[in-house]
Image (cartoon, rainbow, N blue to C red):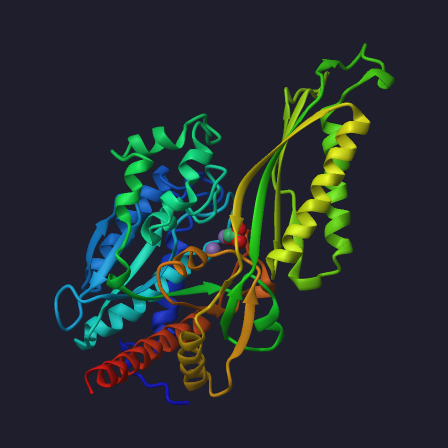
Length: 441
Ligand code: GLV
Ligand code: MN
Ligand code: MN
């Protein structure tokens, strides 16, 4: 192992890992969560705003200048040897799912902060700046659309046009995206001003808990991601006819909920029939009935479908099969369905050269060749790969549990991650100087 005490400033990696986990734990409860008994930190909620404030202070302590861009992303910048140099970006998301874990997203931001704090303590600077971005809405846990803030930085907000797609959509309290942004003096279209010129970003690197069981099963603390699975999401609205639960004969019902129940089971059956081929998974994570009372046959149901696979071909074929099944069930049960596409993300391969640097960094720290693995979970890195070459480092999490309050990481693993990321930055700097040498020769 080439790991040294100087890799994380005056502290050992273990201390950096302890501090990072402790900070995530602090941010895992009120006032950094919008709910008292569980972690829910939706984009632009009070918990999100308090979190931005807390991390801004930590960023300043680590020698960074801090700003929030026109899309509400929190950005800390550690200058390079010259002012205004292009930046190596680290990042992940600040928002959480409802009743989520403390490390999904947040750990990537806080671990990167430990890396920069180490450089700051040692007065170590590079020919490039280092920035840490805390993105706003990776989860889509508030509005039924994800990564608007990431798309804004990557400069693809207008290209993807999610703003048109979600116009009028509301969060659980009835607020539109426009209204939520207006409360902080911003507009959906104005978010596009967060676009980063391509030549201002050298690369994007995201550290994240694995959210799966592979690293733990193999007894490894760290892994290097080769790519991120493709996704599509849909909102399905089933329209039947509401009626009196006591008087509406069973044979005459157009029950939107029983139709939706059959649809949900069909989705599961089709997903299972895929036999894990190409990482295929399909989930119905939200289901709402209307009017949702005991003595009314449900008139309307809304549910979501989230489908993922390693390739667009598998994903899209599966979607075709789902949608055909849903239409058949609707017709047979005499209900109407609306199918509303909400997200469509291609698979995102990591940059091969950055992967090699990350694998070297991991091998230097752990003393063994890095485990390379695919991410079934989505990440800001999917969108950021459209702006700059992208790499990801995975950190082992307990039993692979995520999107669950039982999410857990070992501080020692986080310490290893901080040292590996520190090593990565130095390898990246060496690489930049070799490239420059080649260009000026
Ligand atoms: C985000 O965590 C996702 O994969 O949906
Ligand atoms: Mn998540
Ligand atoms: Mn995440």
